[in-house]
Image (cartoon, rainbow, N blue to C red):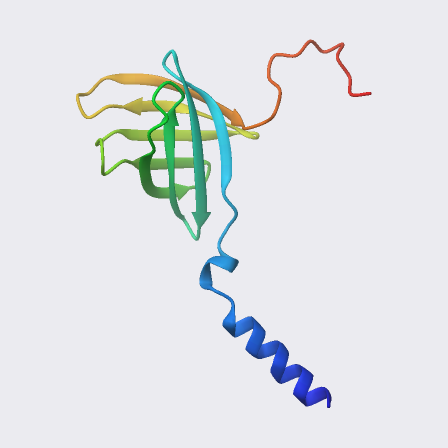
Length: 124
């Protein structure tokens, strides 16, 4: 009976899709230059993929690249834009270089986290 449970458990694990074991998606929001953006990324064994969009257009722009230490290097095949981001605690900072060579500062924080609240505000 225990052998049958073991086999049933193994079958269940093998039947799971590969994506069930992938790293969770992380959402960030913040600024690229003066524009508000939302970024989502997934990391898996040194590889990074995801997308971002400008809040004004809400059109997804694909991203893929690599992570080394605290640095993420991402590129969009769609636009040719390149992002180089560095982790600073939970935040990401860096620069976006457009396909035309324009360089814009990037500042991102985890989505849903209040930013700029006075230190006197405490959860009740």
